[in-house]
Image 1 (cartoon, rainbow, N blue to C red):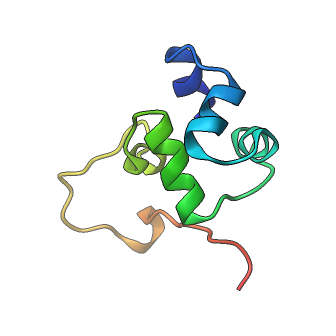
Image 2 (tube, rainbow, N blue to C red; image 1 turned 180 degrees about the horizontal axis):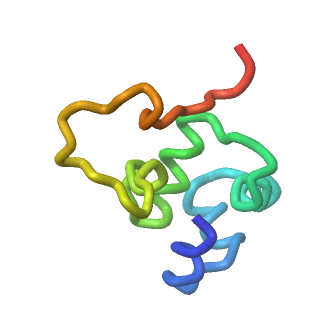
Length: 81
């Protein structure tokens, strides 16, 4: 997210205002200190004009692969239950 924000030449304050989240939350998300809610994540990505899916693609993402073995699966940590 930070890279996208910098490429778009936006400040934390700009993105936070567009996404209607606090600057503190956005900063913590960028630094990997907290996990945003799905709603906040969606709003931040919209403010950065990027699809949420970009956050889950790896550098060698092979989307054409039909079978994903258990050791090759990606995980999504949604925090404590």
